[in-house]
Amino acid sequence: MSKGTPGSGKSTIMKQMKIIGQGGYTSEELAAFRLTVYENLVDSAKDIILGTRKIGLEFVRDINRKYATQILEYEIEADPSFRLTPDIANAIDCIWKDPIIATVMDHSSEFYLLESANYFFSEVQRISQKDYVPSLGDVLKAEAKSRPKGIVEMTLNRSAIRTEQVDPLL
Image (tube, rainbow, N blue to C red; front, top):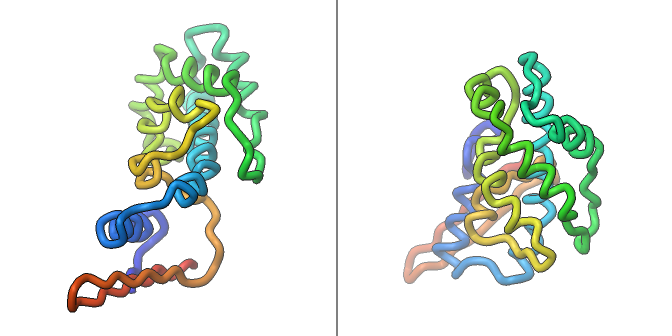
């Protein structure tokens, strides 16, 4: 049984074990992570915007003030057919490339920001493609914000060794 606080890596270890011990993810399983990746990307962009405001800074590029409003109003639909719009991807990319972001990141301990936010920001154009299917890297970096309560169990059979991994969801 794996124990630890939220964000301590329990789910990441289970994902790695699935990749190594069970041959990875099917294309359907990868596609099931799409909404989680979208949520991580958009929520991280919102966190950057709110963090910028919290520390009393403004975006250098005027257009990014408009993009900030657009991002803050954007919602991910809980529909498997949902796709990130090119407009929101462009807005996130422009915000991330604003010259003030380096200063904002120097203050990132003053506001919440997903540990893998940099990764998702650097991949925004790929993630926003119409035919996007999360890569193994995306899956490993993705963090589900809300998970069902209960237990996630995975059994790996390797030769004569049986390994059981249990992730209690609190």
